[in-house]
Image (cartoon, rainbow, N blue to C red; front, side, top):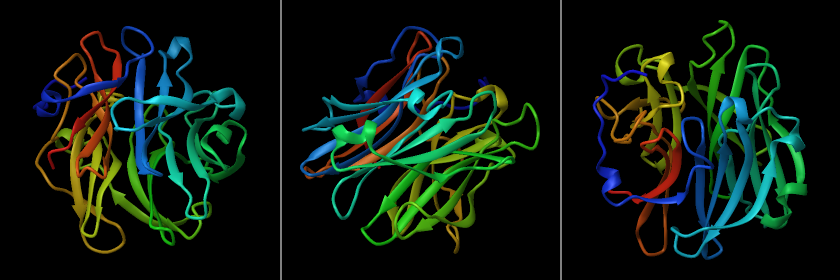
Length: 300
């Protein structure tokens, strides 16, 4: 992992652990969260991951909270039901007509390919047996995962992490594409939204993780400088740069990282509650190399 990136750790001044890692040491991660406020509660979905030799991403969890800090599990979806080798970041949507939709990121066994599947159910508790649709299959040349989805009831917006599969051993490279939909199931691709800079802290990969504002468009994104920093991304900001969903970085470097071990602070997602406080959920490294799912007030 690169050690030349300046670490900005002020988020940790008020951060607390929401879900601890499932074990000690590198590769044990609770994180890749997505969150929203609906029906008078905070809803959080995240994946639980173990080391490569112990199962990788084993489950996607949905949890509820009254205050956005203390959560209780309401549903779990396991990778075996999808024939997936691993799970990565999910997304949760409260459907405009009622009910819920959970998007899960699934790894194809024995390959570097990923696809995204949607699960619809009338209640959150029914998600493990809900109606399933493959919405973003990827292809032989690109793996797709980690969707960030925003809907206002009519228009759906999606920022999708894409990994090219054209160079063996270099599948960690990542970009973000922008898509739209009228129903959240069939998507229209509008092209590249955010690509690696080629130099600096985000030279190798750029993955949008949160939409702070649609108008003007401002997002958070994961970035990393090299292949060795895979899984150890930092968080930066980007904003609209012309038409077609294109984005450009706001700052010269990352705005947040962990002060511990590998420095990872990634998959940040922001939710504003009725109390006016914006809660930022993220996956962050702790001293033993495991990653906890944490929350902190968002100062931005």
